Length: 437
Image (cartoon, rainbow, N blue to C red; front, side):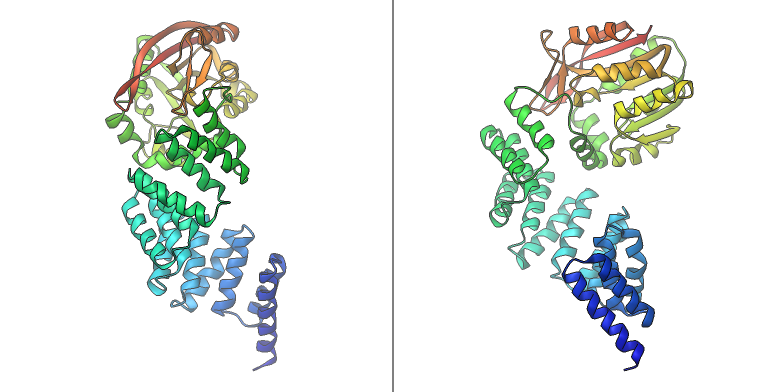
């Protein structure tokens, strides 16, 4: 063995020691030094890629991992790490191909099996995901994350009774899984087991889960003091997972009518708008309805999955991923260049309780005589807003009229209407049309 190879080996072994001790920067430097002396070693390239992933640098990890799989294509670990890097970069299809390649070489590799199932779930291929998880759990019955993901997958397949023991098995193996407690709480809530659901959400918080996120569910169960809005993480996660089936489920299953009804109220005004902004545009159900009414239509949403679907329609000039109120405040700070004459929010304020800030921000963005048009679920007149067990807010009509008065809007109309159905029951809402004075 030459001096260079001996030195490279010493750097490699030092890198493994640093990695074991979680000294990631030192480990990366050692692996890089080993490669400088002896390029192309698949084991060193794989470890360097893994360390860069652990450092939160998936783009930097990808090159050595591609080199590793090219040098030793029969090495499962290289394909697994390459898949992890691609997944972290949002490149889901090639990531899944890498995980499947790893599994072809090492069928019982648990992480590749779990990651493949997650990506299949994200793509709506739940039956294929379940097959992966069943194989994973046969080989590794103590895999707590596998049981948890199996519960989620079964819920996606509407097999709620089977999902419950999967969550319970996951928590028996690893009771500190805060997210699994949250998932269990959500399932128990849907099954009508309210007291058990509340305890599960409390346990999630006790195990370090997001207090705002889990507290939002508890508030919906208790019917007591509600937060002023849904947590952004809840809304984003809900709609990222819903993007693939959103349109079909809303329109065909829930008989969703809000976009068409709001567009009809706008048509009755007989106006041609200059610049419309679709707040919480989702997959773009409102976009084609707004296009004949406005010279330009932009969209805004928290969910990138929804925005990707909306972009495919080709009706939006610009799509932005941002929080609604934050974005309106940003536009207002830009002055006249950011002005709009139409803001529309179809069933978006169902995830906001207190609407004072959004009315104030919208008023600053709208041109004089600009229109704010939205729908909400209807609460009793004596209620300003309430968080329902459905995890959506409802608003009282007097509250909405008071907001319009306070923030300088003329009320062009507030009408009662059936927005959609939920478990075949009509959901009564309000269609609100305001104009800035």
